[in-house]
Each structure stands twice: as C-alpha cells, then as structure tokens.
Length: 414
Image (tube, rainbow, N blue to C red; front, side, top):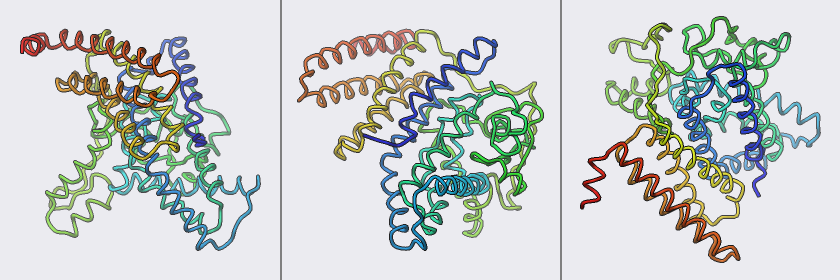
C-alpha cells in the first residue's frame, strides 16, 4: 500500500474542489471550466504516475547521501520535524525561485502556470519532469543528517499546504499575511501582469520572499496564465511545449556560449544581436481572451464519464504500484497517460483521437480482464468490462458521426 501523504490526500482534494464548486454556485462566480479543470487534473495524474518511476531514484540518492556522508544523525522528534519543515520550506523557496529564473528549470515548472483560471484544480497541475530538477535542492538536508522517511513526510506536508492557497474564494487573512503564504499572495504568483511576474515564490512561509526581495502585495486582480499561452488541452504537449521551443531557440542561436546561455539564463533571454530579452507584455484586459474550444454537451458527458473511470483506475494504480511487476506497472502507466491525452484531444476534436480512443478502450478492457483472471470475481468483471466497452464504443462512434459524418460514412462503407 502506498503511504505517500499526497496520494492518501486525493479524496480530500476532490472534496474541497466540490466545496469550491458549491461556493461558485452560491456566489454566482465563474471559477471553473470543465476542459481547463480536467486538463489541470490530467497534468497532476501524469505527474503522480510518472513519479512512481522517479521516486525510487530520487529517494535512493537522498538515502545514499544520508547513509554515507551525513555529518550528524538527527533524531526524529516533534522539534526536529518542525525544524525540518522550516528548512524544507526554505530550500523549496530557492528551488521555486530558480525555476522561474533559469530557463532549463522553467521547463519543469511552467506546466503549473499554464492554466488561465485560478481554482483548486490548478494546485494539482504539476510538471511531469519537475522532480528531475527539484530533488537536488534538498540534498543538503541529507548531508546535515535528517532521516529519509522524515524528509519525505515533511516535504509532502509542505506540498500539501500549498493546495488550499489556489483559490479566489478566500480573501486576505489579516496578520497571517505577514507570515504565511496565503491565497492572496499566491494569486500574485500566478499573474502575468508585469509587476506580478516572478514574485511570491514561497511554499508555506511568505517570510522568505519578504527577506530576499521577491515579495509583491496583491493589488489589482491578476490575469492568470503564462506570457506565451499553451492553447491546448493536451497534458503531454503541456509538458513538452517549452522544451520544443527551447530547442528551436538553441538551434537558431549561433555559438556554443550563447546556446548555453539560452539554457541557463532566464526564460525569454536572447543575445543582443538577436534582439535581446523578450519583453514582458502589458496586459490589456479589454483584448484578453482565454483559450477555449467549443464543447457540445454530448462530448462533455462522454469525456467526463471516461475521465471518472480513468481517475478511479489511476487512484488504484497509485495505491498498488509498489506491488505491481515492472512490466505491468509500465503498461498501466501507459494506458493512464493515453486516457488523459485522449480526453484533451477530444475537447480539441482532433480527427485522430477517435481511433486512438477506440484502441485505448479495447486495450484497457483486455488489461482489466487479464488482471482479474485469477480472481473469484472474474466472470462479473468480464461482463462489466464488456458492457462498459460496448457502451463506450457506441458512444464514441456516435460522437464521431456527429462531428465528422462524411468521414464516418466512408469508414463504414470500406
């Protein structure tokens, strides 16, 4: 059983998102869009699924340094837990700040900022490759002598703290604004208004921003997102766009020295002979439009239904991943990633997605039957999966016919 506090908190996340949806209805605010929220959660699912494979590598390095090079071996007590919480938050501040100030690191973090909404689902929107860059910032704690399990637990708590601050439903919180990172402070961090860019990097304690000169008070309401909008609901592309753009810039930039500067200077840096750093544009609210796609009700119902099933499957995978053989773990992860990619492509009504979705339905159903083969529930699972697959396939064919009637007729005739 996976005892990762973040995985264990999944039900709480969705309960709180439900509460925020009730607030949206009660206050008659527009806090959520289905396509945006599901893409946010898809990025989070992908981060947790890929994290299953990265976690062992990251934790092993921390454990190795702790065992071989720790200066002290600090006992696990409430006091050392509190000290470690402050230390983890301190190192998180520097990781987070450099993720905005170094182009390479920004590629792992940019995913979290792509949503043009601001609600609790945005907290779940995480980059799949961020751990590759973040874990090194915490290795001094292993060297000091904080035990590995305590570090993993405390680091998870620092991450969990940041969930509730992703909301517009909570205003300013009086004197707490001086010490804690609050929804008001973090709304600033997600703004693309020039004066809000690269401010308020704190995890739990805003004192670091106040100490190191990166604090900005919330004044006018932020406009959310990134300066170059993603304009896609595809979680895979959300994680790849920056790397593709960076490689394109490196290819265009002459000389190895400047190519390296593109990687390690702030995002948007260019040599003077290429026009210099790209300026941050002012935000014109009258001309600003959020990315959106037309999503008819029948498409939304299908995507939501498949998404709920995928979410259940992903949760079961995360809770049992440690017990699965490697090949089954890889195949499970691939099916989950394919499901969330297809959901995004369905929102965008990509023509190829109907074939990809049919393949996913068949592969997922066969995989579930295979997993249930030795179970006493095999027959019931097989019948249930068969009914699910038939309903989904018919529903998918119906959607394909609605949006691409001529193409569907040609395929059926062939």
